Length: 423
Ligand SMILES: *Cc1c(COP(=O)(O)O)cnc(C)c1O
Ligand SMILES: [Zn+2]
Image 1 (cartoon, helix red, strand yellow):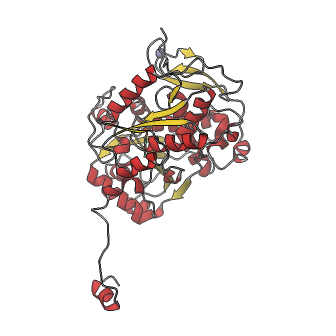
Image 2 (cartoon, rainbow, N blue to C red; image 1 turned 135 degrees about the horizontal axis):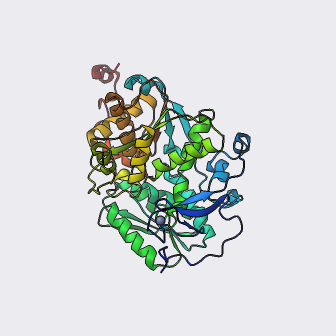
Image 3 (cartoon, rainbow, N blue to C red; image 1 turned 135 degrees about the vertical axis):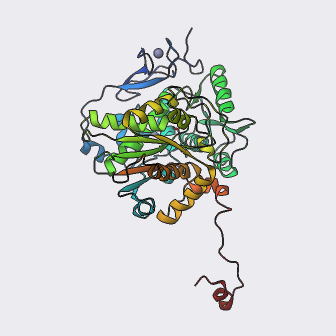
């Protein structure tokens, strides 16, 4: 019996369909498997990830590429002609020196990697671009996902541009802007009465029954996940081919955090950056903090929780990569912490008023956790630190509508303005 998703027919892959990727390897037992629409190990059901055989790759070669994630195509499971296929061309977002926020938090040297400016306003455009390439090479008929919101936006938009049918599944209680941001691109937005973990389970079942459906974060997950590496490559390149000392990353499934770490290790192995220690920190909202809890308690396992937080894009109660996040944060000397919903709201306003960046609740979580880590002494304020903003505030307006608004509502007269006391 095959343990791969039966949803995708055995593909006749073209030569070079996955670039320098050579096989899939089990994270748990190391068993290898040929590249294909597989995501679990046939021996132990562990998660599969991509293994590469990299040629020599130079900084100049990368710098000569386009100003999007395909400048790193030699490091991704995509064909060399990837730029010829229509996609959203995400990436190469701003890395901003955040001196005002740094001063506010008592940090010496802080950067914000601002991924809110991707085509559908979250970092998910990166992973979806890689999943789309795989789906295309597998000859998939439908491009689909279970989503906490942003992923559905990215899948719906990328599928529209690629001319492939999309079906996206979300929890029915999702914020209206995130629903509209999917529905505008696809006729097939399916709202499921349940939380993300219910939606994910349903998607796995559909993937097992329907032929030719590429669920980006289910049966093509190994290819999807590699897209997050580009965040790490960009940060290193934008710092002048250097790694930061500390990095703070939000944790939903934990995929992004594990892949940013993988990207740093690859850059070191390829000699593209100097080998140096760096600490990886994870951020969660208290209402969905199973990985933070495991870190605090010293557990080796992550106990699933029922999410209840305004940080809905991070509301995964049973995170697939949770244990790997624990390993990485412990190994590198980092930590994982969580903050309350009120602290998330305050951090959204703090980032906006110090740096002019409007982040969604996930970014509020990450910035708020950065603040907490400084206060608890877990993060060294003297060291160079990068914090990742993964999404845009316009998608979660409700989170701050009670905190901000007009300072005064006045008659259209000069007297009324003077009386308001604003000048
Ligand atoms: C999906 C998402 C994340 C984290 O994703 P992982 O599942 O941990 O890779 C972070 N921020 C935003 C805004 C997201 O949409
Ligand atoms: Zn295995």
